[in-house]
Length: 254
Length: 252
Image 1: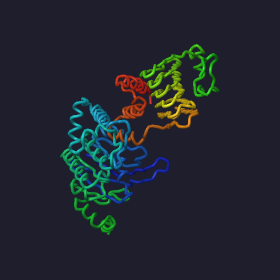
Image 2: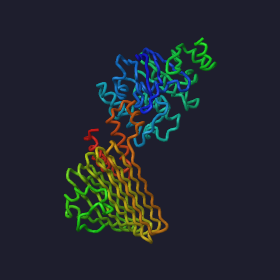
Image 3: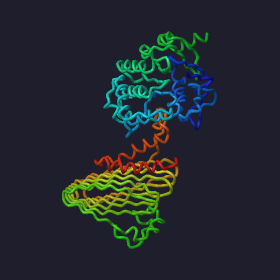
């Protein structure tokens, strides 16, 4: 579904810094793949390179998504092709309501895929159902996008967006940061119910085992120094939690 | 502001950002005409205007607002040539003046709102919200003068201008001018000029919104402030639509 090959990428327009240095990773359909790694390893950079954020430049390597060259697609086309990027810091959009934003987004995606747009009524029904999954009420969806939301509400709203847009592949960048214990469980279960499907995959960037207790990953990779340095099963995350990155990576080098 | 007998020049404070060539084309006859509107005590009126075309255009309103009366004016200026919308308002005791204005457009046109708000009596309030969205080498101006007479105590006057420039080369000018002779008054004014929020654009793209759609949503949200005080939903929709259709025809 997603195949990253020897990806090199820089960040910054004036004084570009190389952050990704030969990253390779393949995620088949039906897999939840967790990426862990020390601060500054390039985890968020990977997410933004996949999303197509301005200022993030690919210098070599390739990414194939759903059989297409990802970099041939504009950011909004990537979304319409089924890529969803859950933001570590969701952006506030004053003056635009969640309902308006998401209906325009969904119908833009459907138009790109040559599908019929949803009517206002159809959309509201869908939005209500997906908000319910994340225990959010419609009143919140009528509010402006992320404006005045707490950190936890923003992350839950991200998952409501994911539910409504129904992507094939989700890159979730520290979706668990800033969540209290109850919210973490709600978000984790939201990810399971929206994305646990034989035809869907998740790239889950996280620092903590807590989220992985709920969203049980099939694979866990360590990203360090801009590359994937080790891939294992869910037990790898448990070892990292116990022993830390330095110990696990030192053993690997030995 | 007196009746025009000679053509204004840039040396005239309220014409300093105007398109003087267009003003000359209009001639004194084209800019001299004032529409007088008188509100009796306690009267309320709401007026909406869509101004501007492919010819220079000057609209001038002179309002006399009676005691406890309310005058609300909302305008979209979205023509493709020089457009000036001018209001001179004199406020009675305890009255209110509301103005919401949008200038929007590209090309090289100058679109401007010029207001003179005279708080002649005590306890009157005024609130002005102007939004300017421009591209090309166009500019949007707001010249807002507030005069508070010596015995106009408890005056509460506010002006808020925000400019949004979609391309380098576009401009916005905000000139608040306060002349206050009373000592117990509130006069607030604010002005900012910026570009579209890059982070919001990326976020919207990541959710599948093509650039033009994202831009329209962001501009719509930005302009909305100018018309929030207009209760008439249909009137508000018309003003917004006039503004957004100018954006639609832009090649950005």
